[in-house]
Length: 394
Image (cartoon, one colour):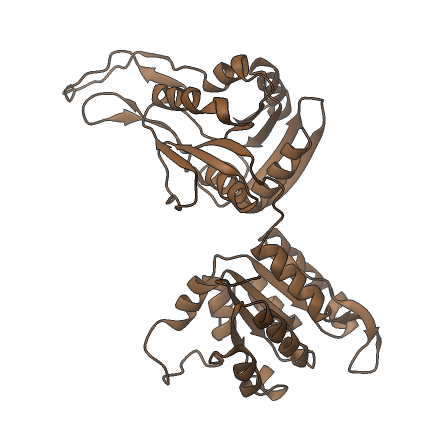
């Protein structure tokens, strides 16, 4: 059942809009809260009253509607959504979303939404196969949208071909799978590290790196959604930590992170070292602020956390990350062996859209048995799911 979950359903101007009524009805029977946003053209096919009767909520059609309690509605709906679905999705709406155009309530809300998004195309076969539509759908896929492919059959225009919106039960199943994902990690204990560490120079300064913690947090969050009991060990983060983890340990230095990992790893089946701890610390640290025209620092290596875990992990699975600027595969394979890890996720941080402090990544996953998997640019939350999938194969 979907009690407590909010589905925002966008309906666009297509004859298949009547099928959206079945989607709303099915979701309500599963106790989901459904809020419908209709484009002006959609109201030419189905009256808003139909959706209001089925959903029990006011249908939103106008970005400038004043007949409601004041709030910035497209933002508030975006925040309420646990999943955002567009069914049916016309070529016009797909094109606008793919190219960042937000000129109505539906496109404005979905642009402000960070929840998972599902798009269900419905249109004439020639429109669906048009190169612009094909490119726009591929663009949405790269942005993390789930596309429910249309099916073949007789279309409203009389043509026979691919373009019919997927059946309501197929779409409802996709929504359920998104809101209640596979619980393949149920009961599994996992340790995940995230973020960077700080090494003090003096009483007011420190050295660190560009890691935001987004990748580690994406893995930890996805693991919880799939049933895992996650201990998160977090250094310096640029993102907030949701209150969903079994245990959260905040650390500052690399040595702090090492101690936290060694204190918590034994009860875990998987150790995911997604953090980017500082490789060096200041040997000539000063408690007081250093005041000098010229500052010279003497650095020494910090503890190698991954290697320390690799030496004692036993039957546990160790997953490490390798951020490189050259010789990606060669360096990643060396780390895999030297740390006694079971899998390495490598990325070239010089590539646009990969690496630190961005929402996307480009990765190569290498396993202990020599398998290599290359992945193009994608959102980090999508890559997190892939990493978890690969971990189950170890």
